[in-house]
Length: 267
Ligand code: SF4
Ligand code: F3S
Image (cartoon, rainbow, N blue to C red):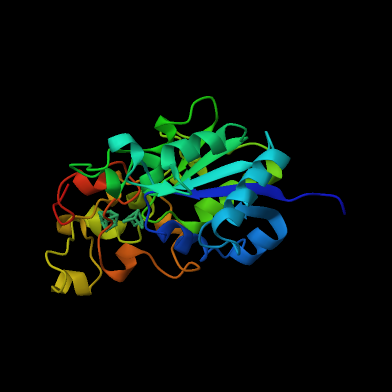
């Protein structure tokens, strides 16, 4: 046991907003501290690693060499292919080149956040950088998608700990998402569902229906077509989720949510 090594994880950040990392830091079961000090060796991560510059790139290469065939690559952000990929460059490498180099000897790839999973906001019309999702570029390796803007910390940490516990990835749906977290819609588990079933809908964010906690469907809630675990696991340690704070689900974990009609447009 003394010689046991922690699972090496290389985290690549491309066209992203760091919201996925912000979300991971809210993980509570396991906590981020438990995750990176006890369970995994986070060998490369722009925001959380101590080193920078050439030392950071050296750490990435060392992890790839030492743990070849065993390390996991987590990616947040989309990859720009426009103009030869120059819209996002790290250590002199385009994101596409760094992704190809890093995944070559990886055991699996986990695309976290809607940008990595589906292209996300960078890919929104007119997609000026030619952004593409990770699975479009990774061939011959299993790719798990954990969408969400940001993704739920339980889904990210839970997928990693599943791999640590069982040595394989969890069961996925047709869009590459872990069924354990994306098997049901927000609507399936929403506590406002009884109001939906009775046809009691808020017509404005400050009307009597809204004050009574009625269903937000007519205010544009996308819960019926959005697969995610927010309504059951909730955010910030199980405190709340968008609908509980009075705003409809905007479908942030679904492909092209930004381009699928207005946020306040009913389905
Ligand atoms: Fe469904 Fe949204 Fe209404 Fe909840 S608030 S019951 S998710 S439509
Ligand atoms: Fe996103 Fe809807 Fe959850 S907007 S955070 S999937 S409730």
